[in-house]
Length: 128
Length: 158
Image (cartoon, rainbow over all chains, first blue to last red; front, side, top):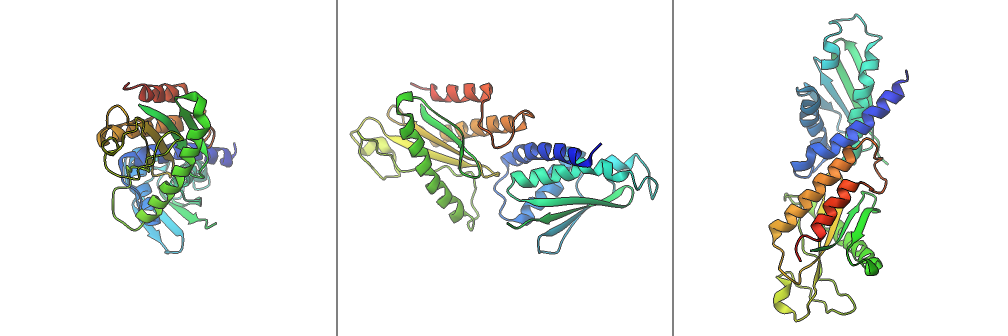
């Protein structure tokens, strides 16, 4: 089972969500607005909760942290199953990447887990 | 009432373009193409302003070979003696997909709300097309549901 296949599926779903969710909202004026939209509206629509923290280095890298990621919360709490966790995050990375691409941002999204169920998604904007 | 409807992708190529008097199709294609410049201008101008992005604007009253140009933003029917005035309207979504609509305002001056509601319907149908898992973003739109929605907009009022 390839993680890139999962990520690809997430990408397509993200593209569709990126079209449907901002339908009634006004235009996004800058990148940060788009990231905030991801953390609030997209996360709420998919996981019924908001992202817990958004950090940036103002140079195109954003770290989104979720302290109790719904897909991991039922698995374990702590360090058990740390190696299995990436499989469950691949789809979500694709989701973020797809939504960003519909909104006009080319990016690379990776996920990392330090201890379940907290996970971090790192979004690196690709400047072309 | 709408004479031509076009959906243009982010990269400025058409995803869907359809016009009602099918013999002059090329003319409408050109019309839509020229409207794109105006749309791009408006988008870049608006980058600074804090206005509602879902702009609805009145393009130039387009001159076809038979008709005169009236570059007026007021109600077109008032000033001209020519029967058909083709107005172009534009709409841009958050994903930079543009909708261009050419309407024939000879019979009734279409009100702003009606145009806005037509664009809203277009946007909803486009979103449905995007959510279709068999549709690859960037392909031409072949959806029958989308076609029938556009047909209903084109023969709405006679």
